Image 1 (cartoon, rainbow, N blue to C red):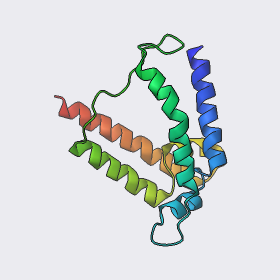
Image 2 (cartoon, helix red, strand yellow):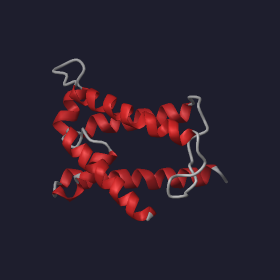
Image 3 (tube, rainbow, N blue to C red):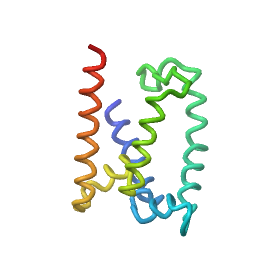
Amino acid sequence: MRKLSALLAGLLFGVGLLLAGMANPTKVLGFLDLAGAWDPSLALVMVGAIAVAAGPLAWARRRSQSLLGAPIQLPAKRELDRRLIAGSLVFGIGWGIAGICPGPALAILLSGHWQVIVFVLAMLAGMLLFTALERRRSL
């Protein structure tokens, strides 16, 4: 049941990204172009997503287990640090250069566009590099 619910949640997320235009690099770059022809429509998508997530997040904070019995693991750390800021900057720069972020990239991976394939491969390489550096850091 957990795998089925994860599959359904992922499909719903992917369809939402596609319908919202988050998988369209031109639309994303228009949103990020604050000094030019700014397209605010994705800001409305983000505000809507935050509003939809607020209720379930408040519910999860009061629980120790999910509806399917899995432990709820919310981040305990609340302060900003150098690693969080650096990671956010790298993510934002990558988003601005590519016009796409990881969720939409996975949603359109099977579209056949070579750029998406290169993006996903680069994303996976970055994850592997991070894992290797973290492993090395903890020694």
